[in-house]
Image 1 (cartoon, one colour):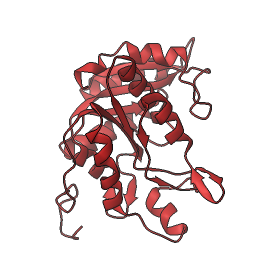
Image 2 (cartoon, helix red, strand yellow):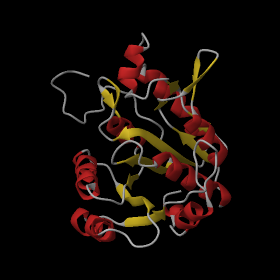
Image 3 (cartoon, helix red, strand yellow):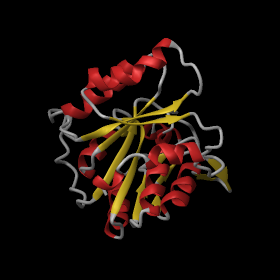
Length: 248
């Protein structure tokens, strides 16, 4: 992308096919967006939709015969029935950094090419980003650029505790500055029992200060595990309470 281009200019890349679905991002890494993306995909699949799941890159993968293997990819495939993660890296780093440290680079064209056949064979897509919206996939291609090209409503996964108001409002600001449609926020891993004052008030504050719908408050479910391929009944129930079909 040219140095003089607008920050959210995606004209350097070919458009992606229009499809229904959602783009799942998060306020930070390790917020649980893979679990939420998988739960949404599984719910839509259970509702009779032909779902395609896509994640542009996964880092922090385990090695099998010298090849990085993504647990996120396996989990999304189990939930959606069809999942593609074109880039995998062993080190838990932003994709552009992980690729450079592995002696290569990130081919944005290959990522976009991998997306098209999944979209073509699916009725709706569940796309999961990497880290947050401003995480670089390549040096000049960030998660927010992919979201703009996908043109899917954004689902923002947020933490429940102290600091989440700021993180969520910053994510909303970035999304809106790029012209992205925001479907809403999912507050994930909400603790059982009595919550501290910040946690107890954050959901209402996010909705009011962010002028956004909080779609779901998902409990901290010990039965849910991406590594073990388990959604957990509490996660399923919270996600099933949302009318995801309005975007699918």
